Image (tube, rainbow, N blue to C red; front, side):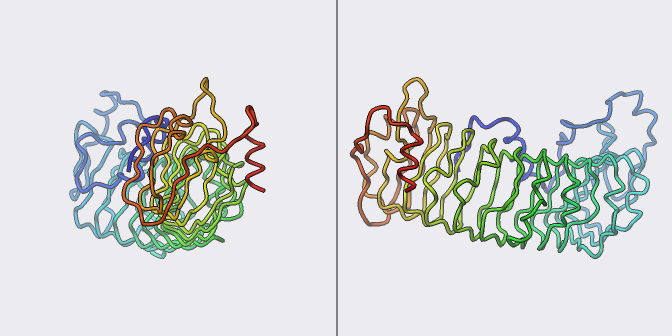
Length: 383
């Protein structure tokens, strides 16, 4: 999978957080040091007691953190009051009692991923009491519900790889500071993500809903959204004006769904840079927005590729930005099309690859009147 070289730094950092936030080894340079919110003053360090749970590791160079990962723990250890960053991943913890963080009220990050937590074993409000908590990672557990309430200070919430079937509206309406929300690999149906559950999260930048039970696109998304991942669901269509509510969208990932066709101009989103529609059942060409850089159409059912519909007009002064396209595992005959390079002059990687047998890719330019407005062509094609 090629990566987008020009995505904003926020997306690159957020992608790393969601995909790589768990590690079997304790970090030599903790990730939290890049976003620590407490002054790093050696004089302050001297005033701290040198406490550390005997099951864990505390490094003098990072006295705010306590590392308890991969220690076969069944319970949360005693946490000293000065700890801000708590790493408990890769253990066998089954419950979070109400007094688990009673002494550590200044916690900013908790990682409880890859444990054996169940919703019924998490005391109600145990996280909501932490008024400085910014990052909470509960992925790879056995949660059936989202713990509630959660503090409105949260900025990153990871709940992926659980058994969650519903999203409590009150909980998500209060999470107005969350920028990264990972709900991937759960059991969420369409009804769970409709209404105002997510639309009230006005700072949300990245939403992961991959590998759930969605049959339609999630509704009521906030305008702030930059990246949407809905891979490996059963989505069969996209409404024509769906992306009008997310004008800042940069990346859309929809591999392994059931799309057979999409409205011609549905992806006319001015800031869209990555569009991944691989492993669907698409057969009809659609409009490629000017700023798009990476386009994935591999493993679909295209028998023809009408480049002039993808690119109805050209502008030497403002050329299309497409640099990468994947087309392998369709039913195309030949990748040769001189107009594709005139339309996408920045195209550098054209992955045609192995095709299933069936003709034919269009090579002729469709005649059109000089200066025909692009939107007119879109409407004509939609009709």
